[in-house]
Image 1 (cartoon, rainbow, N blue to C red):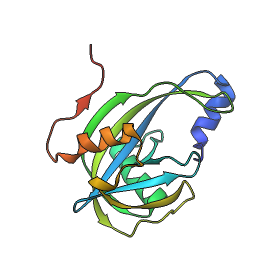
Image 2 (cartoon, rainbow, N blue to C red):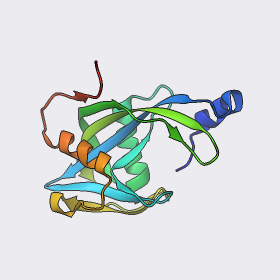
Image 3 (cartoon, rainbow, N blue to C red):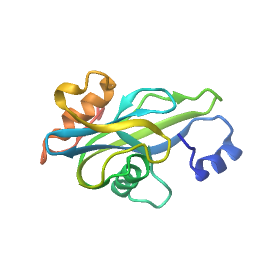
Image 4 (cartoon, rainbow, N blue to C red):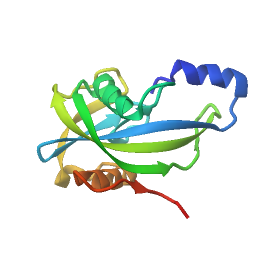
Length: 157
């Protein structure tokens, strides 16, 4: 996954210290199928995801990431989940605390393909074909299935 320029600029100032970032996950539906792909960096199967750029609306990030990574146009229709992910420590020592905003999205146009190299495979899969998808992404899919349920919030003690 390519590191955004604004993150590289921040890393020059803070080194490997924990950096809070907002990420999005796009759970995209087309008929009874869900868009999932295999990540190039670690081989895991999951929904399209990415980092919100400065000044960008999170729903717009979900739409942008689907086009950039999978070559499909989508419309974000509902916020399904807000959660703090466990701290990620990358191989180079960089630490990130992601707040993940999960959006239900509907397919608009395009055939999925690995568009920018972040995914090696991508396509439409039915609910019974998701055995290889990461457990955390199966939860995101389950929460995004309903078209009009309120968003879920992890934590909130």
